[in-house]
Image 1 (tube, rainbow, N blue to C red):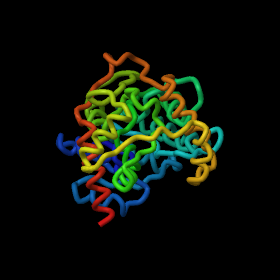
Image 2 (image 1 turned 90 degrees about the horizontal axis):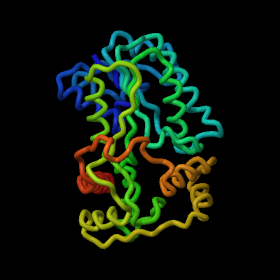
Image 3 (image 1 turned 135 degrees about the vertical axis):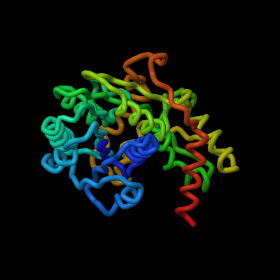
Length: 292
């Protein structure tokens, strides 16, 4: 039995699908049991737990062979990341109490960076869970290709995509969430000892201009990229409702300036198999279905 946190999300769902394909038993760890009904139909055991409640998490992790752990995405954290710290404390306490034989934790490219940014939440996660007397694997994936979901509508409607990844011809490591979940499941099923870091990217690196060329193919219309000027970011993010845009800006600076990158060389990263066009086709189909 493997416990999967975040099963209703893209990565957690991919982890569970891979485990089920491998004929493993899965325990879905989620706060709202109703959201887990599709997984219950597929044979998963349900465990109601909250990332702010160490007691419920401990019960959810009890007796399993392994745990896939992750934090929910927090794009607008308060200064000092108190929201993430609270969940990390509960998660660490529960893992220490339940003592599963192995843990795979979703982290991020650049988790080792010393400069503060939005991804520092996962730096803290690695630091805290890395101190547990348990075999913990930190999976550090590249920029998710699924982040381009926000670009489908403007690309289809106006033919223009606003890019914060710059310069537009720079190649960035990216990966599909399906690859992230698949590799996480494989790591869960793999015997391990001690702490380890696994870095993951897609089959090739991608520049924003290549994203637009691929979107043009997928949508059947010309799509071009517009590099959003750096001095416009804060006002734009604030207008979108963010209260604390600085960490997000720092993260984008990190990718663009190169100090958010893999700790190892490109030759040392695991390579996924899902290509950008496949992801964009799925995103476009989902967007069309939602609009219908």
